[in-house]
Image 1 (cartoon, rainbow, N blue to C red):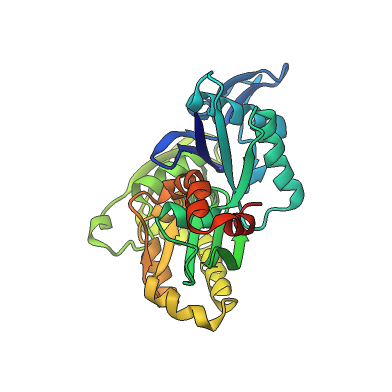
Image 2 (cartoon, helix red, strand yellow; image 1 turned 90 degrees about the vertical axis):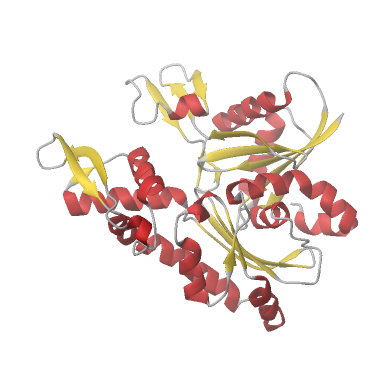
Length: 339
């Protein structure tokens, strides 16, 4: 039986969809390894639990950094583990479509393809994340209509205008959910002289993170966070508020806004009307930060919208790409979009 498997190979999370119907797997892209032997202990969710908590002879590693493979062998083993978890041990004829950032180099592309081949899947193609995100959001990208996509992942943010099956203008920056966490860690350290881990920062972001702290639902909210006092070296509890998170995220959010503005500036004027009419499509896990859509809409003057599951769009779109583009645009569009 032939199946199309779409993979959102993210810096923080790997999502896998089979035939674009649903998400078959969603796990952290983390591998736990013994330092002395290099033996893999855990992959995915179990490995993530070990981040910042491993003994001296074990290290938990993200094999991807800023949207590209940084630890080739670990990435290959991780990919093999996840694909086997989805397909089982049976041998099937599957086409694997893996999403990549828009500005990836040829060397980085080859690393992804080689990792997939090493994991046992030779029939593999690559597709840009923004293209997959648009397909996953049920947009017909083969039409002569401009669509502005902003995909905010863990390691990168990809912005692109797509029309007639091709990318008209694009920008990829190494800013995403992970940089948000780093910014919160930095803010707490500078303001309270307390060091917290990135997992704690992520928890802060998820529980009280917002870019619009003036909303009634965030008034009076706060979170008690335990970290290490840098002056005394002892545990210390500090209070973090939604306003603190907003202030901490000013710089990474500005970088994303600048990228969106640059792509709009580089878009042919004929497509500006389409973008205003359709609105800006916002996808990726980072887009789920409260108030982000409001900030982009205010900055650009264009309506912003997201599908029901913005974090799943890329994987779903990748799994549908071969079938959808084959039906609507034939081989021409596949040649344009597939790397």
